[in-house]
Length: 217
Image 1 (cartoon, rainbow, N blue to C red):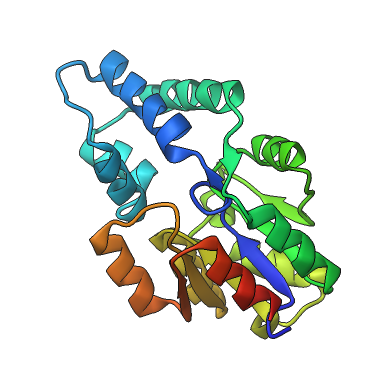
Image 2 (cartoon, rainbow, N blue to C red; image 1 turned 30 degrees about the horizontal axis):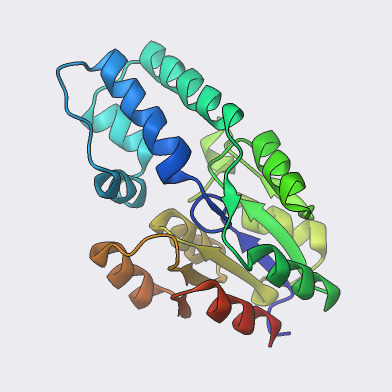
């Protein structure tokens, strides 16, 4: 295999979670904390995740205070704990075949690590490593630390690692670490995001089948 380790995003790459979990959490946050503000649409929420990033959106555009950020986190965490998202059909099967061929599977996400492990356990697969949301900014996407740490722990050179993500932070992380990035395009089709991912990734997967063929072959 060209790539012996996948650094796989979780939300809207492995699992279908934004529409069912993260966006409803944000709507509740706005209703409670900014009642005079109309929440962005679901598509707009994807775009805020894409650029500038959710934390930057909350701080710089909505002007959340530290206390409000803590309250937002608690609401989001409750939504994530209450519902287990479904995996996109074919993702778990592809990862199992990839592992049987000797590949390592690492999850790098802005979700909580324990929740990521819970979701994968429900799907019948255990990642080799999980990097979730970390309050230390230097240890979460788009910073390269998860990539370099995974390379050190797996003993693989950076040239054998591939980041697979649906949004810009994963691409920026890959670029900062000096590894390739590929785009998961099956979770949403927003023109601005798709154009960027096609331009900055070594491959764009319109569906899970394309992803599976790429990593297995």
